[in-house]
Image 1 (tube, rainbow, N blue to C red):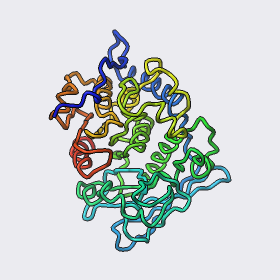
Image 2: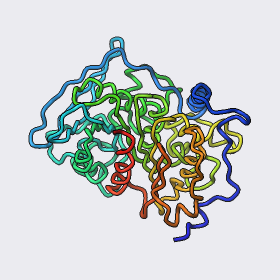
Image 3: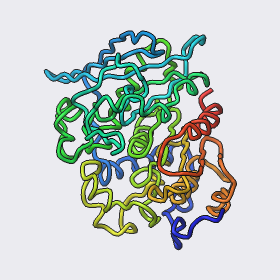
Length: 384
């Protein structure tokens, strides 16, 4: 199938990441990555708060569910915040095990059909209209994330899975995002935007995982879909403990570059979700911005990155995301040429070069078991 013309964006180019005439050494890569992270924090994502002064993990049984309820309590000065997560361990395997850590819109209650796992009344989340919810956790949401997080598939591949709801950490609301969770706990200001606060949540989940004897702290991956794919990539760029990241349809502010004029723009994202990123980028011409998303991807090198996109999801710009990955691959020292976008679209997929992988599937904006099967096939060669 020929890619639609409106997926391609003619005349597109990203700035080279390695200065002309420079040889890529580990020292130069580290220097450049520090610059890219600083630029992205200053101009797009805002600050990631420091770790809290205290973190305790309480492990609670969830009978007949195959999961374990984790209650995380975080302490900063005289302030305290508690949040729920769930842990699934493969049966019959001894640890320490590789881990996949994720944030989901609904979280464990979206995977576990039993009402033994509590709904968080303080969470503010994005909910699809067909579920009859209004941004709060309701009983209609139980089980709605089962296909997005196919736990048996992940456990059978040998992974422990740790999952929490993003809205329990940071309300996904332009009016209330600083009212609950991370922001009041850490005393953040407007320079710490929601995507950086969800990134902070990923890092705290990894802190919790490091306390679990069943988890191998040297083999931890993070995963996220859509806005949570953006946060997963930013988390991987900022924490070397993350050995691999799987970002599904992360789009604008994730893997899709602003200079590739397809799908959602920074101006549209800022108008619809002003709490996610720092204001002002939408008013600038893409060519004048001091950053673009290949810098985000390149900040993760030499660790592994896997991107998945969908043919009908032009809003998340599958071609731009692919081109950003190809451009960033120079920082991994990839010298082999990638298939051009037309060839990738018409059948050369999945595409992998060492620690980098990409898959384009039929369909629209969602996280499907097919995406996980492709990601797991890639991760098997990266996580050991």
